[in-house]
Image: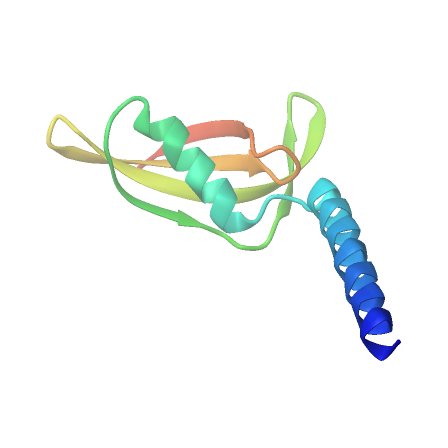
Length: 104
């Protein structure tokens, strides 16, 4: 009888863990690491990247009258032998690049 109860308890625990994980995945926002990876993939479409960074704390950004919770980051690209730096904002909820600006 004890083995049967242990198997039932283990099965219930596994099922509960699975349900909780699915719920967390649904509502979890994008991590800064994933956001940087997505931004780098977007920038790599137009050429190689030599460096990148991301600020780990989201900030509120206004773009075209809309407000976003976004990570701020940057990449460095080598274009015609010259390093060019770009800063970007990436949406915390969707992982979409909101804007990108070349910096000095």
